[in-house]
Image (cartoon, rainbow over all chains, first blue to last red):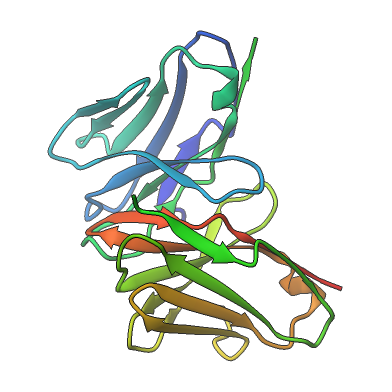
Length: 112
Length: 114
């Protein structure tokens, strides 16, 4: 049973456009929702994270939108750049010290 | 801040030998670290949770006698792949819990067993 479903599997966006990746979760006990960026051959890097007490969090060009009632959250990358081309993983956890449950990842390609 | 290192970054070993991978939190103490395995173009698969001073908790299907985990200090956890075989070839990544909820990942170790 996949607890965090991520879509799309791959995404191609024009330079300067908005990249949108969506995730849905099932476990209502989840209370922490991070996004990670991974380049080939590297470990994932924490990009941005949100707790359920807010509906949106913005850091630079990256924004998380969170819908608690729908059990969905999404990552928006504004003004997408070729350097943003990577695999993005959403994740979820609860209780502060439990392992993250990852989505299957989205391969983003930003083309000029 | 919140930097996690792994050593080695790449290792090639012969079938039947053992390999040790180190995971260090460089600028913070981590009572909890996690070990993951990642196959090409796939997501991260949790192998075990490592708590400082206690035995690791392994996920279902992960052989604890094959993947030995030791979390001897607040900044170091090690994963030893014993009697490695070609099917153990993979990308192994550790993460460390910097503070409540926030996990930071190491750069990964590419293991190739010939």
